[in-house]
Image (cartoon, rainbow, N blue to C red; front, side, top):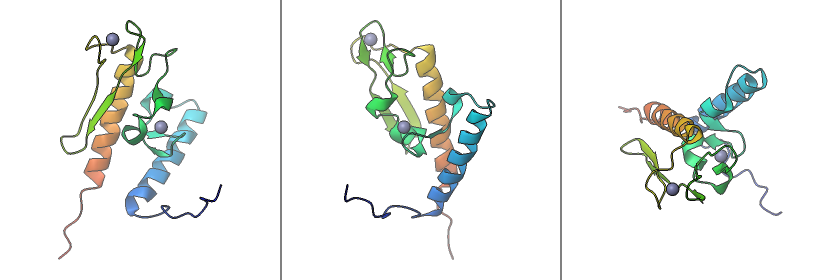
Length: 125
Ligand SMILES: [Zn+2]
Ligand SMILES: [Zn+2]
């Protein structure tokens, strides 16, 4: 209850871009123009999807996002920001990718490459 200071708000231009995308995707989704699975941002966590996809909130046994039905277990996420890769694989059967998980993976890869493309620091002379 005491953590109300907006400490980490508006740190960098990356955050500004994120806020912009979040708002635009919220709007597109509300208008039915954007499929929630195709979002690069997460409206629950207020982050890029690859930054919060490892949260348990992104596991859904019903839609099978990050869920292996055969093993009834969640798929861990490995995000490599340097290599720009995102992988999800069931620790038991080594597979477990559903259509929903495949779309989630595609969104994570897209958000990761979007951020790494934009976030490349400019050389200041
Ligand atoms: Zn999230
Ligand atoms: Zn499995």
